[in-house]
Length: 429
Ligand SMILES: Cc1ncc(COP(=O)(O)O)c(C=O)c1O
Image 1: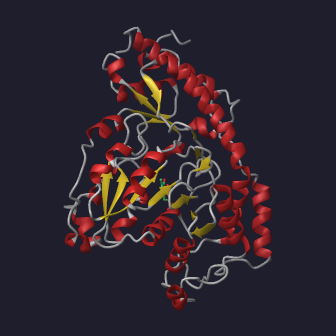
Image 2: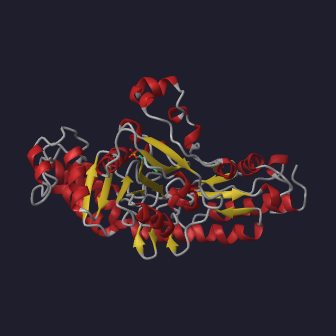
Image 3: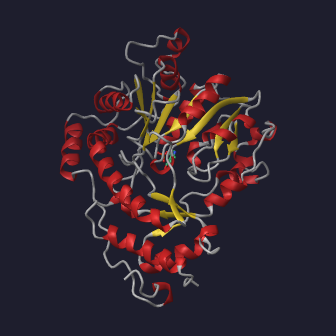
């Protein structure tokens, strides 16, 4: 089959099986859990006890942090984390140029500017070597995002951050359950934020419809986030910070409170996370093993001594045209799709390319007029290598939603071998 004519040239397709995504969540268990909350009249909870508190405690413990705070989504958790870390008007936050927009958008609301940092062309994760030159007296924090389950080079990032006294915000929305040198992602920096958006199939690794959580070790950061984001809520034991205590119970008046039903759903997903991750790692290892001999296709790297996890958004592979007679990634995607592989380019655009972050975009100026007063970041790096790598991504979605035994997986791997086999024989175009 792998030597037959390419489907893009009219040959037979390598993939005939329909992928069958599996749900890690038993719907009857979820219905029972929600039924209990309905019977108990738990529709909203300002105290953080009940389903919200139960999830916060178990998730924080799972990640290895002392405090967890539930949110209505991941974006608001990030907003609270930035604010708690002291990010405010005129500040700069160093942020990787490849991520989902929500990991950086809250900065605009705070009157701060993102300073986009290059990503490693082999991992598409923040390149620690590119951080240092971006630090200026206005730098207030460094943000990292563990994209699609792969883990950032945290030792190098933390070394720079500690040397400069900068807090690190970790966005773990794609990597629930991943770890680095034996510690869970989300516990490595100062605050870890996680989106739990989506359903059990195709949503975040711990998914609850709409929801988020922030975790941290510092009681001070926890109290700041609580005071900012959770009207009427007083942390267990009351605010230790006398000034924040004075604001209670109305706090800052903001309410990004989690829904108890969502947190009950998240609790069930969390219970199953390690098992689901083990299966996903098995499929990922098989993909890695199969593409290794293809030479012109590699898997986006994860940090040394890390265990990737979660894998939201599928697997990012990198096509290397210089090893493939110059055939570009777009052509490879066409050929793979013709073979029946569900794939596409990088799921997200590069952030510095978005009109939202260009100083001259009228829409952004209208929404955030105060940014006109904020000086543009003084330092920038060459994002060309990041752009080149981003343009070579072959993103495959399904394998991370399938059980290891799904017949789609070996057929998809055959399709890779077929396409790259033709390429190596110069029979591609
Ligand atoms: C990396 C990342 N950060 C933050 C978010 C925002 O989370 P939410 O949609 O729950 O607000 C997402 C959402 O997909 C994300 O992918």
